[in-house]
Every structure is written in structure tokens, then in C-alpha cells.
Image 1 (spheres, rainbow, N blue to C red):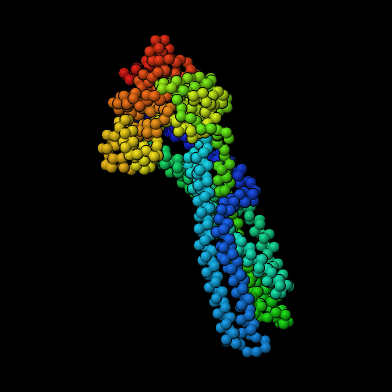
Image 2 (spheres, rainbow, N blue to C red):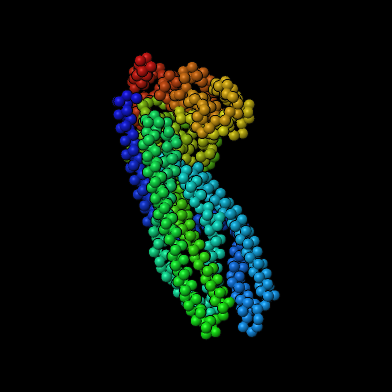
Length: 621
């Protein structure tokens, strides 16, 4: 690379880094706005609506797993009290081994019941939880499929990917264990408090004095912990978004020798994520020492006041041991509830991001009374179209084009003149700001999107090949197509020969974006895919840009037959491909400057003539 080229690359890299930094700052601002929101109980309730379809499955889990498990846990300290007071240290007799064995057998039975109920609960809550996560992820993915192009224009692919994967995964613990455990712990706490106060109101009240102190200290940490966990989710989202962008743009990174810079940027994000995680974890773990300290204070009160009661024959030794067991069982669910609160904070941070997407509505939508578009004859009218991607910056200015059934219409012009925008409006990827698009006299906004797009085939310059076989990629145009129809379509666009030269022919596996194929081969497959769909209207958007001249000549010959009877729109910079079109429309900055046949436009020696001359000089140079 020359010094001048290196200089240019450095400038581009700096500009990219500056723009990327600005973009990250905007993300930080938006996420900070989210952080400042209070805990949203309404949103939590909305999240739990995904449990409604599984109420019948959860009912036995609650009855068997929660109630039975909680009752056995509450009963065990009572058996300990009875064993001490009646079998080990009875006031009115000697120790009784048979009684002790009986109480031991009862305790063993209770522990077995508790183990069985916990096993049942964990198994079935995990099953229900995974089904809820499946439903939520499916709902989110299905909803994203319905959103308009404007939604994707404003967001990087990595950001969308993170919502469907990481943010949904962050809710797994909440649904698999959190909900039932929360109910169990609450029931256990209420049960313990009632038992202690009933057995000895004064002693129970004394040991409970530490609870308000614990809640007072822990509540001061909750807000900071909530902010910390939301910050962790933000940092992880940025890492995943950057990772996706880095993989997609690896060729650009290597071409401009920016691997080191990219690694350093990723390392800084990764280090920031570690710091955020450590901070959140440290705050979360602070609940443990607080609860242990509170438990220790409660135990001191218990043994101090309990000893006094025993000395005055107001309390038995067994009762004191039972109190100690219940106090131990009391702080255990308190500790879990503190962890559960952190789990809720993580879930809330993720659910905010998920519901942000679920609340998005497609800009291009169907009317409630939208009808099915009848099989089109192919009469297309763009009636005085005005369109703006951004307010105040029109991409089209009063464009009117009429294509009669079976006609071939070519759109030419400089980059940014509005050619692809017109095709986007025809497919209803966007709706015009003003004007109408009519097919056979019907405004396309009055018909269903499926019936409209099913009659339009499109081949783009940047062809997308899905992971799978070549056969599957061609069949994407018509899912019920037979193998014979697939081969016929491939032959028609001269793709059959190169497909058969591959190791497994039509069963050759291609990876994402078809990296094992050349650009020209990928475009041939997209031709076969579009032709197999047999659309009434066909759009070729720079479809032959990456095909060599010899292949292009063969395709042009095939297209003369294949396009017969179909209305076609050809967007091309390579003007030799549109010479035989029925009409050529020349666009400039969103307006039509010329239209007519090739011979007519060459005769007036205007803009089209200038484009032809410029391209001829370029090819001759």
C-alpha cells in the first residue's frame, strides 16, 4: 500500500472511529434514560402474562412442589422440639429411646417427602419456564418479521440480534425457578412468623426486631443495585452489537489494516463490561453479609432472652432449639429473596428492551378491510409520487410512470437519483409521502401485503444466499416447487452447468451469504429463485452488475423469453443491459428528466445520451 493510500485509509479509519464513537454516545444517552426509570411493576405483570397458557401445568407444581415442600420444612423443627422435650429431656420422666426413634422416623419421612416435592417442583418449573422462553422468543421474532424497513434502517443488525438472544435468555432464571421460589419463600416466611409469635409472642417479637433494621439497610442498596445490573445489560448489548458488526465487516477491517484498532476497541468494551459486572456482583453479594450480621444479632437476642425464659420455667430447652431452627430457616429465604430481587432487576433491564421492540408498530401496515389482490395483469402506474426518507429531504419529486402489461421499463440515472426507491414503493417496503402506486387500477395500500408481494419477484445486486443447499435456496421462491421445476429454472438462467460442476450438485451446502460461490454465481441463483416464483411483475435491481459479459449475454437471451408476458422493471447502471427495453426512464435527483425508447433518447442527445457516451469512454479507456 502506498503512503498516499495509507494516509487515505488512516483518515477513513479515524472518521469511522469518530462516527462510531458518536453513535456509542447516543446509545449511552438513550440507555441512561432507561436506567433512570423506576421499577416498573406494570411491565413485570405484562411479562408474567406469558405464564397464563401454562396455568394448568403450574397448579400441581404449586400444590405439590410448593405447599407440600413448605409444610414439611415448617414441620421439621416442630418434630425436633417434640423429640427434645418428650424423648430426650422430658420433665415428668426419663428419656425414651422408642419415642426418639419414632420422632427420627417421622423426620426421615418428612425429609423424603421434601426431597420428592423439590425434585418434582424443579423438574416441572424448568419445563414450563423453557416453554415460556420459547413462546417469548417466538413472539419477538415473529413480530420483528412484520416490522417495516424504517425500523431496520435505524438499528444495526447486532442490536436486533441481542434482543432476540441475550435479552430473552436473561429471563430464563426468572421463569424456570424464580416465580415458584418467590412464592415458596413468601409462604415460608409468613408461616415461620406466625409459628414463632403463637409459640411465644414476646420471644418471637424480640428476635423479629432485627428485621426492620435489615430492610432499612438493604433498601438503601436496591436502587444502586438496579442501576448496576442495568448497566451490565447495556455493556453486554454493546459487546454483542460490536461483535456482529465486526464479523459482518471483517473484509473492510482487513482491507484497511485496522485489526489492531478493532481489537483494542473491543478490549476496552470488554474491560468496561468486566468492571460493570464486578461492581454489580459486589453490590449483590453485599446482601449476604447484611443478612448474616442481622441473623447473628437475632441469634444473640434469642439465646440471651431465651436463657432468661428457661431459667424462669417460661420456655423449654426444646422450644429454644426449635426457635433457633426456625430463625435459621427464616433468614435463608430472606437471603434468597435478596437474590431474587437482583434477578428481577436483570429481568426488568432485559424486558424493557424486549417490550420496546414488541411495542413497535409497522409503518407500512395493512388496512383492516384490506382485500386480496387478484391475479395481476401487470398494469402498473406510479401516480405523482413524492417520497421522503427524512422529513424535508425528498427522494422522489412528483414521479409518474406507467407500465402496461408485459412492458419492460428501465430506470437509469446517477446514484441517489431515486431508481431503487421507486421499486421499494412498488413492493410496499415503504409508502409514498404523496401520490399512489396502482396495479391494474387498484391502490396497493388497499390490498394485503402477502397477495401483493407474492405477485412481485425481485433480484437485487447484493444477493442474499441462505445457509442450506443450493436446491433449498432456489426453492425459496416457491416452497412447493418440485425438483424438476428447480432444475428447469436453473437451466433457464444458465445456472445448471455451474451447479452440476460442484461436488454435490444441487445438494451442495452453502453457508450464510453463499461465501463458497462467486458473486456472479450467487446472482444466477437469485435469478432462478425469482423465475421459479413465476411473478406477474419482475424487478431486476442492478441484477447483472456482477456478472461477466459472456454470462450476461446468455442471461439476456434467456430473459427475452422468460420476461414475455410479464411486466418488468430493470434498474441498471450498465446501460447495455437495457437497450431493448420498451421504455427507458431517466431520473436525476428524484425527478424524471427524460423517458422514451433507446433510439428516441439517443436522438435527442440529452442526459441519457451523455450517460451512454460517458460509459463508452470509460469502457474504452
